[in-house]
Length: 186
Image 1 (cartoon, rainbow, N blue to C red):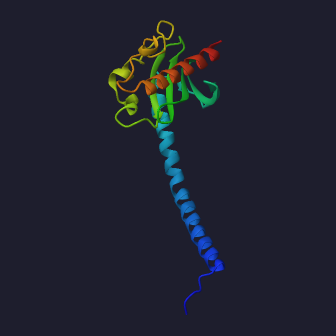
Image 2 (cartoon, rainbow, N blue to C red):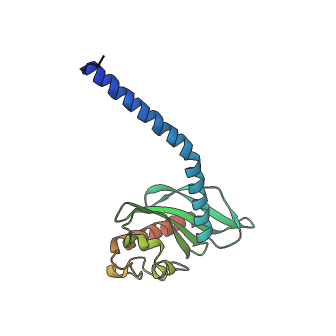
């Protein structure tokens, strides 16, 4: 005996299909949440380690406003004195959010930067974490003696070739982190 196609049967079939899909999605989420969280935590710790000088004790995450957005930072201390800060800074790049970890020493210099995540165009803006020249110019950068803008905007930062928007966003993220740390040092 064939099932008659009517509104009631179509609704029941659609509801059943949606319910099964929802249960499957919830199961996949439950299975993958812990490994994803562990991976993100590992990447965060590696990023913090890459932007701070060796040694010292790392604080727990503290909240801070970076570029007008709520964010977090970490302090590296030695003998109770803060020696450096690792600040998470988020801006909008060409393809979406660009999230950096910026290390700033107690004298206000950028120790190093690290990309936590980005949605930039592969082969162009995505070079923000692979272009050696672009990345090297941030190590030891003194914002007091440099203008944190790309050269196209009368600054001192060399942009990634064909990726001016990403370079501007990266530079803004670093500037926002430097400004936030200045507020902490007062």
